[in-house]
Amino acid sequence: MAACTPKQEAKPAAPAADAAKPAASAEAMTIKFGTDATYAPFESTDASGNIVGFDIDLANAMCEEMKAKCTFTNQAWEGIIPGLTTKKYDVIASSMSITSERKQSVLFTQKVWDAPNRFVAKEGSTLQTTPEGLKGKGLGVQQGTIQETYAKKYYPDAKIKSYKTIEDAYADLAAKRIEVVFADGVVLTEGFLKKPAGKGYAQLGADVPAAADPAILGEGTGFAVRKEDTELAAKLNKAFDAIRANGKYKAIADKYFAFDIYGSK
Image (tube, rainbow, N blue to C red; front, top):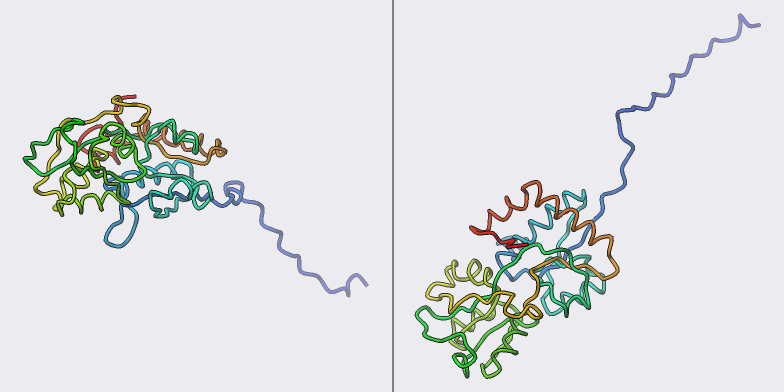
């Protein structure tokens, strides 16, 4: 009987697990960033509508360190914090100065860059950047910024006009509806004075450093997360430390600036 039993083909053995092949990893974390892309060279849109800029490059480099995927949402400045708290995105990367007032609403990372504040006016202007010198003069600022708060405190007799975007302030300066714009110094220099639209305009007076009023002008610029997202803040800080140490931060900064944008510690 045994001789008559058909011979069964041996089934091929299951392939041994490839010890060198890693187990399937969990899907990469996605971090959603919100930014007001009207603030070149830190965040703006290119001709194709892509969000670009120094803050965007920093965020991408930090995500690379975290092995996370970055996405970016263009959000008007006045809604930037509400958009974070309602979970439209996870992180604000939008030239946001670290101030005591904002710390009540968001949790900041460490400083990612620092810059002074500046006035810009028509080239050759004889205006003085003192409270008396700007009395009765049109002074443009972006609404919701530290510069708006500072202007309202120190220039109460100026005709302060607040704009939805800094670009709107430039337009009114060109139309002679205001005489001066007060904003982030790098934004004014790199995003306006060095562009065709800034021809015929120049810095007015001296820089206004954060030390002029730290309570208003802050402690540099950071990224912000919801106050409860301490773990995400820690990961962002660790990634930022890594790109500072491995040279990626400097390489990115050198694409945009001919000076040290990080500033002193």
